[in-house]
Amino acid sequence: METEKIDQTKREIVESSFSAGNEETIEAVPDTRFMRIHMEPSKRISILTMTGVLSGAVAGGYLGGRFASWQYLAERSHNLPTTVSGWYYYHKWKNYRVILGAFKKASYYGLRIGAVVGMYEVAEAAIDRHVIGHTSAVGSVTSGFGVSLLCASVSRLPRSSFARLVKMGTLGGLCIGVFQDAVDWYEYNRFPFYLQPIKSLFDNK
Image (cartoon, rainbow, N blue to C red; front, side):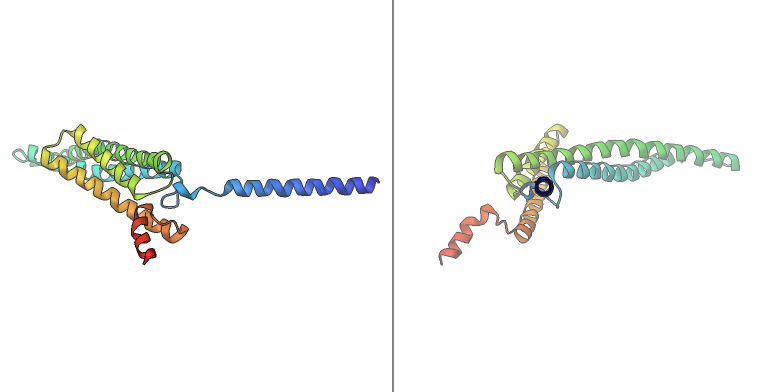
């Protein structure tokens, strides 16, 4: 009897551990409905926002340093140094100005581009989850249109530039969304819902 009880206890332990392992495996499977570029929304938002910040910082640093160099040359062109020590201090202060200008523009562009990318990703993820229920080009287009409209309004651009920025944002969102829908169709056999009427026409034939 004691041997049977021990065997039963061992069997229960093995079964419980096996079921627990299965539950962990099931929980570890990601929900592909909201994944874009093979990343979940929270991970995608953080990574792409940081990428936007770094890209803006690099571009801003380059532009700011070059502009500061030209500005310093223009300010000193009428009174250039004539001695070795004069040229030494000329280049020394020029380097300071270039570094300062690069830092200012890097911060400016990095924060702005990072904020725009972050707003776009948050809006896209929110539409995917709470409106459509899965990733779709509709969410990308809506996010691109909304964020570009907000940026153009805040910047108070002229009418022509305003329309151009909104068109570029909407077109960019459309390209991103269509590409992601094509990836989902290929990998998960998830046919875009906005193409269902066209598919139905061919199926009926």
